[in-house]
Length: 424
Figure 1: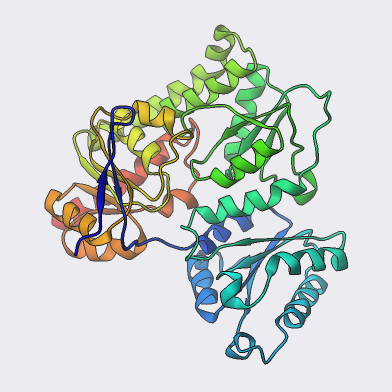
Figure 2: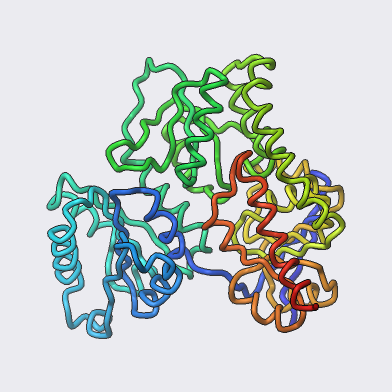
């Protein structure tokens, strides 16, 4: 029996559908792979099974030559059965970890399953360990695949940070907060552009080190750098921060719209904005031109996976001339994606949620030139003669901003080039 398909009323000119059924997505533990590189003195301790340990080791295998800042405290059958005291075991593992790695200033306990499954309340454990290990801060969040898709792991991590952020002084001048893990080089590029616009007080969440996390209060204006940070945004607004509505900084158009939202909020004159952004826009458009020739008219199908699908679809359609067959996304946050939805071609089919079998049938029937999907679907689709792009690669690669626009387009060109070589 097919899962229910609910056709929604038009939303900003798109053809919106909702599906319920079997999904195929990574779990939120995967976010550790990029987060542990971002916060330089943090450590991520996954509390989970051997299966979870294998997942993290496999997903982060490219970093095998570096000493990682993540590990797994493995829960065995004796822990689940209540034979061992799980809290004592966890305390022992954490104490040994901190003794071995005195550089750790921020420790995340990451649950691989709900507390009802692992028989351990990680929030209480984090509070207890924070008291014992001060000045090391211990926080917790869930990376459970039962509760999260893989980018929601970052959302849960950043949301866990917010309650402990310093409070902004009430009399402080308005400040700008960029929310979402970005590569250091991308942060530096944005800082230069903001400085050229005259916006000097710019902070990032997460910061690169635990002791430089930003203060937040009623004078904080924030820009989301990623579309999957719903819980983090809610937590920031509870602290008084205000979101600046904007598209996301993917491609020349998205980056310009994102920067313009900050410029308008901070009263930057149009001439100053143009001077600050024109060089980057020109470089981005020059970098995109050769890729446009290869992607124009190509039919693209998105399976729901990362929640980046709507901004990426906008980028491919408007800046590279691709045709959108279907844009699937795990969740569609109407408010955060409003600017992106408005920019999608009229009538674009957007599917929120997933019924895997039904979506596979639609993809096979459409035979798109390029399918953007998770790792689990890529090999079967490639075996059927379809070119695929791994959506997870778009999280591991710096793709935001003007200077990365060409690199982002190249990620979509690469599988088409590979297919062409194989056919010869």
